[in-house]
Amino acid sequence: MKNVAICISLSILAIASWGCDRATSSSSPSAPAREIGTVDLVVDFGGVHETVEKAIPCSADSTVFTTLKRADQHGDLELDASGSGETAFINGINGLAGDTKSGKFWFFYVNGQLAKQGCGATEVDPGDKVEWRYQEQPAEFDE
Image (cartoon, rainbow, N blue to C red; front, side, top):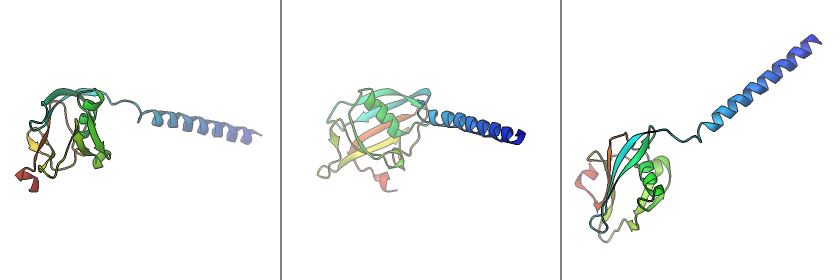
């Protein structure tokens, strides 16, 4: 009888601690990331629209894509994007999309340097300057 009581007690303890662990881990991914500063966002429409310049809050895991999404969520611009994370792609901003006739597309720069990877994979830190430019393909793009 004593062994049965010990087994039941251990089972209850195991179930209780499993439940506590599940509650902790399931709530942390949905918790909002803590803002740690701002990123300067500049969107240059190549003369088609007025340039947008905003300071956008960032967190420790912010990317160029999440920065642009935050600007969209705050009503600073209208974003047309597809994919997510590392596969995120910007189709257009404020109705202006890539155009094969004019040869102009969206390119982004971080701290003046043309990005070498996608906007969802490029991380940003507080104080960084992210520029989206509607332009012809820059020469350094092929490098």
